[in-house]
Image (tube, rainbow over all chains, first blue to last red; front, side, top):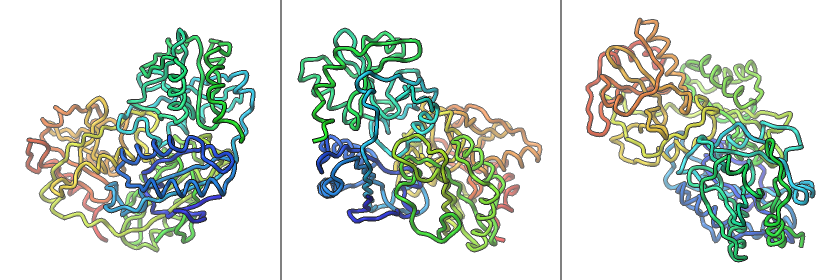
Length: 271
Length: 271
């Protein structure tokens, strides 16, 4: 199932700047019972991204269209792509522009349930994240670093890969955010230089705070990661995966990770 | 005029990874009298890019297709986009993949002739180039930094913008490479951390060497740029533009710049 600007469609103009320059943004949304989970957070992040790239988008129209699409999809993943639209040759953004909205439906991914139950091993990616504050945090269409990083391993023993920035700081997974538990406190990487500010990350931070846990966004070194009491990954499709292995280090699934899995369980339910 | 895989076509699949992740490469080629200028250099850079991204492409087929396209276009610009093709959701490159070839024709850009004759002013862009050695030099589809940089100025008094890297080194223009003349020697930025290795840059380096000039690729500071005897920009569409102004500094059009304009003049002729 695929829509372009609200209508079923399979193709996008070959002159679209989304193709030419990755000039746009996307969201990947879990859909259950015809409704988008964490819709407000997805639309909020998209809005921030559109502001950052100066892509004018009608969020009311977008919300309505997404709501209709999710009703038609029923269950699965709705991927929303917003591009700046077509333009003349050259990098200068056209004024005015006609942003394009692509909606793609697909089934929920078949992640093994043991990833959430028994935890996963992290592959230490060699590809580093470049530091670009102007693009940090938003979910834009320039994703070659993730493509290169994900191509580094084929062994299914690794469910995700760890990405560090050019200075060696721990940032995130290839398609997940990362949390550490240290002395009962939650820590996640500051995303001011690179990385994607995930909606599940934001939701976990909000719910953990409500539960009384201290939550900090800060720079995290590789040594600090290896010394953490617990590590877990998150994204809006699978929720929370405990990390039980990285390089030579092994962790049991920790109590804070289990607690937070239960705290967000409603977001992963099938009804 | 637009072709997809050798056939006239206006649309690309909304599932293409070129759109989803900028997972591909491009070339912008000057076409005169039905023939591509600097074709070997364009295909060579594309080949390097495909190797770097592990996109399998049949260069013999590509050359034949491009040759036919240029014959049909006659005069103008041929933009070639190669993507990894469609894939399942997720960053992992599909194995095998079916790369897609897009060819877009457009008229030659109407740059004012005085840019080459009297020189241009450079706008000092605030947007910096992130340092990512794995993507440096190749002309991939992740171009948001250029989009942001080009959006920084609207004043036509600036024909191009100067881009520095995160460490402040001078790298290139938004859509050009940059050369300095210092004591009769040519210098251009090393592109091992970021930047696009332009085909005109390569051609100028080769022809200047043949003419007996020393040519160096090295790191260039902003102070060194301001102290240079001459500065010029280049790309494969317009050739060479002398730089006559940047911030408070003013340069006359220098003799080495003029000499090199004559050395590459055949590439810009209309016949």
